[in-house]
Amino acid sequence: MQSGDLTIINNALHQFKIILEDWIPKSASIAIARGEQYIYFCSGTPNMHLEVGLQVRADSIAYRVLQTRMKTEAVIDNSLFEIPYYVIGYPIYVENQPAALIIVLPQNFIKPKLDTYRFLTGRQNEDWIPIPIDKISHIESLQKKTWFYKDRTQYMSSITLKELQTRLPDSFLRIHRSYIINIQFIEKISRDLTSNFIVVLQDGTELPVSQSYLNNLRSLLEF
Image (tube, rainbow, N blue to C red; front, side, top):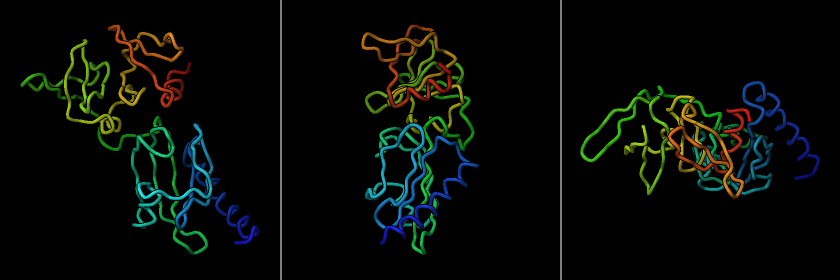
């Protein structure tokens, strides 16, 4: 393909971004894949590690859209973007060839599509106990199991953090691959001996904040 043709296509693809900015956050990233590679990419905030010419992976949303020609969406934790994100893929055509338009939204823009939980039912020994959601201080993933806490008491849940993330109220925020906190229970946010951020809850529990989620915490609490 000649450089002039590439410029024309790139200008046309950039129009997608201009139109989409009226409907999606400016921090969203936009990519377009055609054939076996990405032909357009505009990174939002935080920066996504993707570039034009990168091969479309078989486990990606872009690949699914190209194969099925159907709208596809998912919440993904481990990805080539290196941070959790919400992605929507749309089948489109570029130069009369099938393509995939990919919109990448950071984790804090994920909006629950189902009714939010009012209770979580936790297990202790052989008992199942429903706990009001606003009484839960934090939720933890440990040894492939999910645990949530009320008054420092631990309950086991059958729901994964990934699933919970889409149905918890806005007062809950993921701060680490293994932790979701209820911001109503935050006592303070401090730094540890290595200058990494930690969240200290009202009951004294200290939880680490990973770099992947720090921007979300800063944005929500404005510090």
